Image (tube, rainbow, N blue to C red; front, side, top):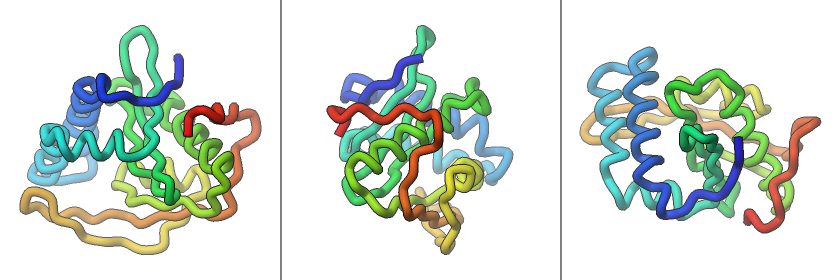
Length: 168
């Protein structure tokens, strides 16, 4: 596996990863209407481009393609954390979170924050994010509950490699 920064050329593959993962995994937690509304977000090129390219987005890939991605904004906002549906629970999400934490630490960030889904909340909590509130948002006329999480005192787990300085 290699880790690198996402580029505009990755957007089609990232859209497919996003859509397929949501369609495969969200039904365990969300209604069919919620799942469809969420999955179709990948079909909006402007929204997807903003999600990936307006922040620093890291991708993990191997010879089969991109396995996951996670984005970090300059303000400490964790904009995304997605793992390809057929590679869930294999440590890829954890590796991405380690890279995000290392990058945040290198940049002197003191607080990270995000909105977690039902199925990403556990990953955030595993890395010391605490749930501080919930919110209801509407996407394509469908309401979703999201979990507002934050982490202060940024530390990198033992044994993690730091994000290279040129990844900022």
